Image (tube, rainbow, N blue to C red):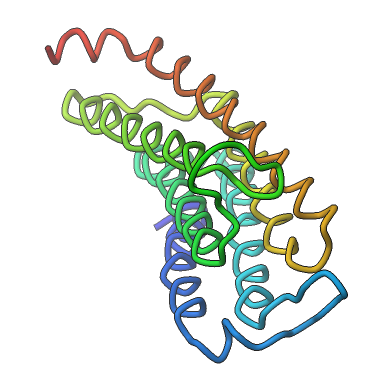
Length: 202
């Protein structure tokens, strides 16, 4: 197994680790840092470290794969899958912490409809990837998808700090709105580039 693929698998392994941390009541309810606005739990502090390390492997595995010519079919498929898992679980953790509003638009909270758009997009793209795989094709992530992933990860990172300062909450939510736009845009590009697969499968 190549080093980039090992890093990708490590990123996938980070997902259940974050879930376990969030599910431990003591870690979730105990403050690590506190301000006049709110506090950061021990769980958030640990998950920030896990998230940053996992996100760094996303940058590292791609760079190593290209530099050493270690690009593999598994890597093309598993790398974006690992990103999706990391992002979706992180958003679910934020939802569990009450940072996602269920209706309307509130610039202090991430909209539930935005989370739904992200989920639908990822499920749709994953479905297209499966169809492509059945035909022996591997569709690598495009530049728009990579920018979307980068912005989303930055937004999640900021939102994990949001309990400490109001301005950080606001910046994180604005970044998530940008991420939602990029999610729709990159998804549309991906579907357009994969239109031959969609028509052939009908």
